[in-house]
Length: 278
Ligand SMILES: [Zn+2]
Image (cartoon, rainbow, N blue to C red; front, side, top):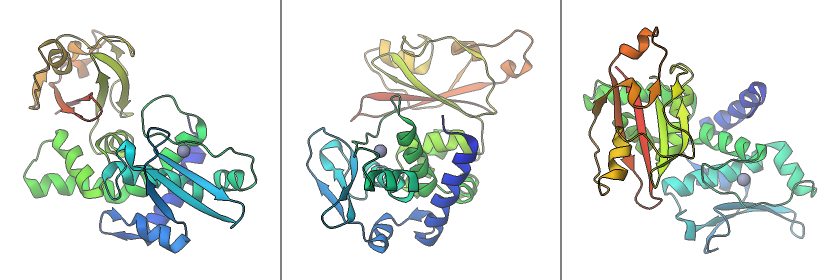
């Protein structure tokens, strides 16, 4: 976990840079690389890493390597997150100086949801602030719903944000959980196993009816997907809070209508279940 004051420091820097290099909602990563004189190499490195920042002691400069074999094509949402993450290592003094003076080993960065070291968490956080600056992100959350006539919140809001900011669905979801305009809870599962979750601070802290690392509840939409020959339900389903949680009996918030909508990642095989209330 990144301490709060460090988060503030990282977001200030990232959002300052985003502000200098942007066109409406889009942060112009290639312009940043040009301005900083950091060559970005897109190449085939099999499954060695997603991205890597290297310091060249001969030429005294930094290079960023992006692995297209892992799906990080230039200007794709995934490629953009990977590049923004490497910028985190470049712009955060502790990371850049550490690499330059050999205090930090050059490391393989991976775009995944597994347990990460603090410097990886910091670079991810930098990337999400760089790609999705707070005010623009929050403004567009409401603007999108007005524009599309989708007055009610749903997964479409997340997908609309992901499209406008050209950020991956997963990173958009994480950002929305942190600064979004609606309370959400999302469970990421794979092969019928709950892998990870994202929760807004204002979403109730109820006990889960599932365990991370264990099967997802059968009556949830994701559960049905895994148990019924992978039939995909992408619509908004009404369900009961106790399909996913064990709320205390005296908590009135549990009586609200809860919704679940799933998004399926074919290339990575995971399912995102988004839960919310009216
Ligand atoms: Zn990294």
